Length: 472
Image: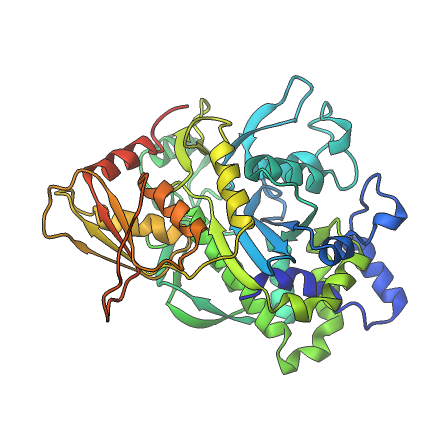
């Protein structure tokens, strides 16, 4: 479960190879830290030895030559607390609506996933502040933007090109990924066929585009898409299959951005397992050489060496997973240009509740994971299943649903039967279901759940208020 250390340990493989080869590789990976003097280049050692919290931003982007190649599909913050001996992994949605300093007029609102791309592009954004131009600007702007959302400074970033990572997976001989649920995607785009007319003529194109607006795209241009199918369970995947697995986004069963983030984490875990397998040793040099084309970071080789030296200790730390979703502190909205975006539940730029929750969560030991039962106490069909989906998006896996004996409940309630459940989880559930005060009860022998959520009609109203179809 120590997934955070994969992205760091990958670089360690360089250490045992000849120096001249290592220097060539590291020049492609490591982004110079602008304005940092030589004595500060091993800052990780300072954070760990002095027990100061350390935040590392992990970014994944599509890569390739298509539009939006550097929009970050995956955004994850790893918070390392050497004092509490805890690693907190926080998933941050890419669709968060935030003002970025992309021009000289006070900034403009963009989705959070644009920060890395804007920092990378000085030609189209010539009026950016100077600190977000030049070498390493992409990572600096992404760190700043995510820091605004979570209310915490971010010391480092690591960026991964998913498109180029396909070759790296093949170098490993493929990976074994635990697919959590069976799913199909009938709209997975075929690379290179984005503009293929699929046998139609240019004269037919206007009517086809009009038809595409009212029907499924794969029916109008079938050659542009392929059908993906993944069965639940452990699956061996080559690079192309693994890339499709983590990038699929049009599945009815698992098509949300939150589902994609989980799949990307599953891939990272699978790579980690393969790296530490016996058969990996002969592949070290080609693997790292391939990897160096797909990663960038503003850590130094000294920083990474420090993490390696501390890896035995760090791997004993407790791991706490967290997620910002449209089921807790965020609300779905439609921007003025029609984009589906996420904003704080209390309104645009109202990040204080998020900052408070994250600070409390990062600063406390994680408690026992809750086992949740959700009951529908209303006549609204499917409400418990809707709640189940929100809980799953937020990272809760041990949940069951059912109907309450009565269907006249108006106010949602939460009853906790185990006081060792962490405060961060209790706060999260209160936010998700709009419950001000939780009730504590005594656990009955043989009871399979530790938290009982009884849904009232107020929860349906809460879902409506968070609905994507409300304009900003």
